[in-house]
Length: 513
Ligand SMILES: Nc1ncnc2c1ncn2[C@@H]1O[C@H](COP(=O)(O)OP(=O)(O)O)[C@@H](O)[C@H]1O
Ligand SMILES: Cc1ncc(COP(=O)(O)O)c(N)n1
Ligand SMILES: [Mg+2]
Image 1 (cartoon, rainbow, N blue to C red):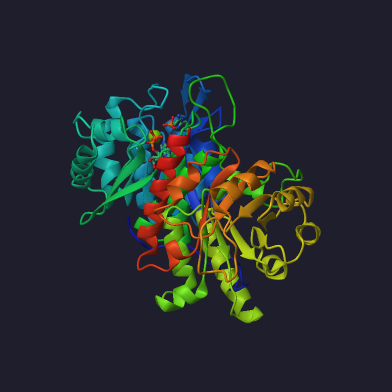
Image 2 (image 1 turned 60 degrees about the horizontal axis):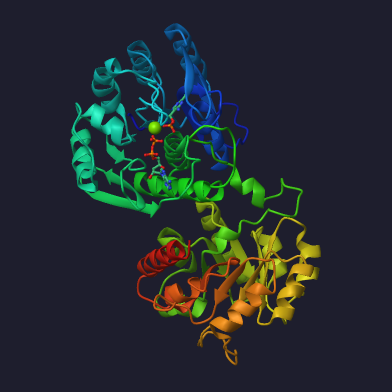
């Protein structure tokens, strides 16, 4: 694609705010799990405007595709012209393109109205096995669309079809396929491994013409995966529209898909094999939900990263970089714990950290300082027994923010529930240097606290790669994860340590289940 914008400026001289804009050219899914509907929701969740050119209307639900009505080519052309000629589109994302004529029209429209990037999800068969674009489309994909694309995102079956039926069964096959597809012309290739047989992780292969990256996330056990492909491609487009580099857009998108699947793994819509998920999970943690119960997702406690500015200073890394590395490695929630900084400096740091956490959809809590949490619009606070009482913090923060309380005894655990806390931080489980005069509870003390409360619990204190497994294997149902400080941040590579700990926790969690 040509890299120039297509008219971001306005001519009347007034100052106007340009909002990142993705145009999706795709099919409608009446069940709203995939297609145009998924694209709109994914862009909304990522804070990006989404316009739509509809190529086909499908009658579809969680059982499968019952009917397809292709929109006449001239009318696809008319929609494209309406949007592209007027609306400052940054990135075009394509999904279901059901005829050769529609591919041709898209090609011509993009020549007439170039955009900054083109993301092509070469949709062919829905996960339910129904054909959305037949094999006759393959040659026009290869000849017209792929060479224009900044990235293509085929799943295993689509990659195989585009390569003339090359069998794809292993990660090594996916690597070869990514390279072979790159040779057809797209700038970047992401071969998605959601359907890779026998894989414990969800593995995707990214190839930029030079380097091949293996992107892994945990494979969420859920039936609610209808629309993952559309969502991933839309999220990549959204991040590109915001100005991200390609690799970072892909990583953020993959992390977003993993987060929404985890969040939505138990929701129930439809009686078929494959349900939709909830793209707008963040609204649940935000201001739009008026019910107290259920606003906090306890599985966020799985790998809880607590920051320490001394440690980051010692290793010479800015706080935001340390946090980003922890999230990339698999941290599911971050607590900003600051003992040295003046309030103003703390607030500035907190704002930057909220920005980074929000871009990954990971909640950020502030240790102790309810005022700072309010000022930077963090997701909540964590308070100790000598900090602001949870009951008062709840009054100040309102019903939607997350509140965690440190508890050492069953009595404190019962009180936390009464006070309206969302979770308990229980420790120190093992001896630690990060807190002076902190008595050690051991696994028995941890169990006693868990059993005394209905609240989810995260274990803290001296937890690291060598003992995290035994903590998780205590197997108490409301123990949801571990919180760590030194084991992540007092180390050379925050990313590598977090990744390692995440893998250990996943392994331990699978033993317990
Ligand atoms: N159960 C899962 N847990 C986590 N990630 C998943 C899961 N299933 C699919 N993904 C991810 O979702 C994205 C879409 O992949 P895939 O399902 O293969 O595409 P499609 O929907 O086009 O068939 C990929 O990044 C893939 O790794
Ligand atoms: C209109 C439309 N577009 C795309 C897909 C693919 O989505 P998935 O591969 O997740 O079933 C779909 N099912 N319907
Ligand atoms: Mg797909």
